[in-house]
Image 1 (cartoon, one colour):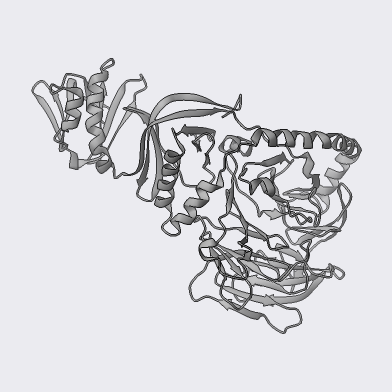
Image 2 (image 1 turned 90 degrees about the horizontal axis):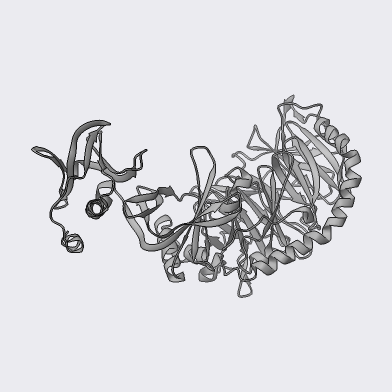
Length: 611
């Protein structure tokens, strides 16, 4: 209080505005003041409104429709507003300084980070560039109950009242520009993207550290390192942009020739692909399984079979209805058996059941009751192109592992946990090692079915909906709703599958969509299960959201260029996609009502904004 008075040298409180209660005028030509941080007083002549600060449940500034500065506060369920007269900056600043002292306690704010010297930019989608909105503003990172919000203001002019930072796709960090960018949805469901520029890297890191400490109780240093190390200086961005353009241009001639060839059959192809299951109906394509030669896609209780050609897929036939005891089986996930003459499927409607479908007889050949709700299953080991090495599969329930071996009379039990580990998904390597994701975001790495995990990688709190491991076991990608975690499974020459890596455990690269690009995806990302190309170099990560396919170059990502992705829009919503085994260019795309093969070289890098 003394500090504020010394700054302004003011004791007299001048007449400055009007007081309203629930939009009803109470007094005009009044003064407003906070006395000893205990009382808020409004005085107009002999009329005095005296509010105890302890009775005020919330207080903040806002602009009226006529752009007048106002302060509003709630007392016992009633909304009070004091509207300042225009051209009274000194009076407003004096009162603002007093409110600033009591606001966190009244509003229940925990201030995690404060900085009064950052600049604010806004992203202009039309010109695809950032524009300076304010050269100097204040920010507060606040914890309100369990939520983290970012508040941007210039004294009593509230620019961003409190943007919720709840998803790891909502923001990203750029060390080169010392910036933090985030996206918000407006009332009209449009996307707005903002960027704050810090004066130095230490200031940026301090901000990120405050956020990580507030959102993560365990493994703070590990996750802080993930956030800071994830975004390296993008010094080669211009060079990479040029390389990408050259690569795309070199493939243009081939793509154009392919397009001319396809155009003649395009309409016929689309009609055929829409009718292979007996006409368009309420069912949509769902599960996808791809081998070098064939592609399988489920639609309700039917399975369509396609042949993988040089640059397209061609329809071969349909298993029209999979039945067991007169009831339909609706494949939720499918995997091709080792000999390629059978499919292993889980049932969407009976989640504890698994079946072997003989592709020759088109009937159920074997049945397994897992007793628990099946979360995922995968081959116990795969070859260098991702195909099963045997007909053994690992099944996963929320807290239990087991093996399915057609030669055994029943399930082979593996590891069970007394606590609910909330497993969601998994995958294996060619050596039979495997990893499991969970609802809490953790990823466990195993060398054996009946032993404890060798390495536990803490997550960011979001459910891992899919896990894919490259056949070599060197790379692992975990899929969350709005971001991917790319993990190198080795550290100092030791595999996390074989030995606990302790403090040397690998720190994931977090792959997200830049906020500036979210408008391509209607403002929201809902990733399908990501996978890694199984060519010799295991070089690309592929995923889809909505109608879009995205591909990351892992080599560049691991160098710190986590936004080095290319995109392509399809005709319909993509439900699943996969590289052809052993090929990093051919991509099979299962849309909700159509099938297609696309070439990776047809994807384009979206434009990045200016610095």
